[in-house]
Amino acid sequence: MGDGGTADLSVNGTYTLGPVTETNSIAGFTPDNSPANSPGNVNGLGFFNLSLNNFDGFHDTATKITFTLTNTSGIPWLTDADVLAPNGHDAVAAVHAFACVQPGCSTDSGAFVTGYGGGGTPNGPPPVELSVPEPQTLALLGLGLVSLMLGRRQRMA
Image: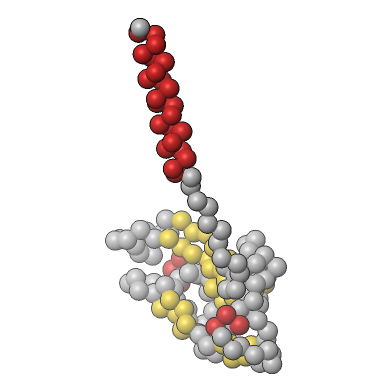
């Protein structure tokens, strides 16, 4: 994660951001550990009131970012799900991700691809499961094959 929109959250209410720690498990990368918190719109994923932005691009990426939020809004955070609230695009989190091929990933190799990703409402409806009508499909296929065989027998006779 790195550059503009490194890690973004739609926090439910006002907050105080505690110390931010960034690490990268791949040798040679130097996360800046002091990303600016610049709330704003993140690449079509909506407005995030917590938006950590690293200083530079691929060289300063992090594979892990940790921080503490302190609720200052008076809105109780009784559960984990209470901490985040969907923004206008129904997203609660976003990242600016850099993909790097392993083994051999280095600051010299560059990112294979980079882009933004986000979404997910913590209390949203469950995904709709669509069932595939396998028995009906197989029955129709079987009837079609039987019809072909009967038609072929009639032509031979």
